[in-house]
Length: 427
Image (cartoon, rainbow, N blue to C red; front, side, top):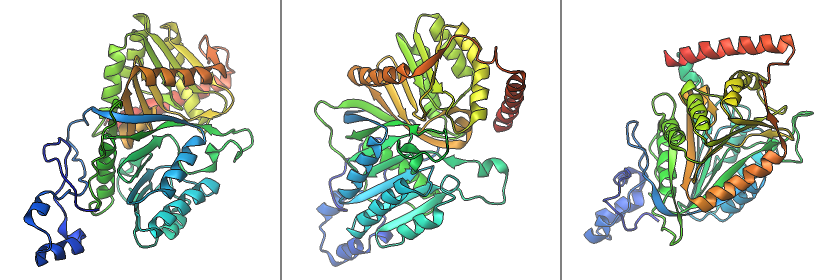
């Protein structure tokens, strides 16, 4: 597992083999059982990305499959049950229930088969299940770490969260999207009366881009403790695969994901379709949407309707809708349930993953999206969004225009809080 051919000229950063992490390999070297030629072809461990590195490059030859709803959990459990070498798992939101226990048991079974399992859970998002997760994964071949546990320090440092959602299996495939580990994503499980289930979307990806996901996971893992001790993956490209890359955000210090999105919006020619559960974003992004609509681009924004986990955020987003609508942006609210998907479609470019369009995501959270550049895949995503729009209502005017006075006053107060927090995060 440790030894394979390496490509020293590749741009992504990798470390030398960490001998202290491979005592058997060290003994082989000392005994002379391994030749110098074998050493020269040793494949290094996954190396964390530094804070100031350039964005990941576009790589070709990837196979991308759209996932929606509970199909994600089916694909996740199937991948975990068929893992052979390694599993890298990272997520934010976890709540005890059927989904959480099934995934934890699948991770535990993989470790019992000899698969190297590494799990990172956000300490806040998994606060109610940390003890259970630790109990499931306290076994050989498995390690679990919690991102940024609360401490006595400035508030903004405790608010920094790991919002990424990914599962890399055997260095050959990744599953990503907006899902966490909770029953709220299952149609038959409704934790609160009237809440509905959470509709989500994402992708399963195979190909060279998996290495970017692995390197990014290594960064988070190292932030929580010692460097990752698993082999650097080198998946093969598919002949008719698609170009793509990983766009990631590291909070205020690294907003490459938002810069990539903003650049695409400014260059859009035919369509900008956005699906997001929270639309409380920066003036620069809203300005880019309005300018695109005025120059004839089809700009469509789909947000949650009455079903949402943060009603105050819905009111905050309403404050921005009037000017968007006046500029020609089509705004819709999804009615059947809470839509939690994070998808951006610009011409033939698609970005899908964990990234919300709100200030907290932009300034405080670790995020990651899979970007895909392909017309056929973009059309497939567009067809799915069209299906969602069938069950959405269009906002043709300011949603606050005919709202009760109490709602308008509350929206104004929430807007004031938004501006204060925005200035606080920028300070």
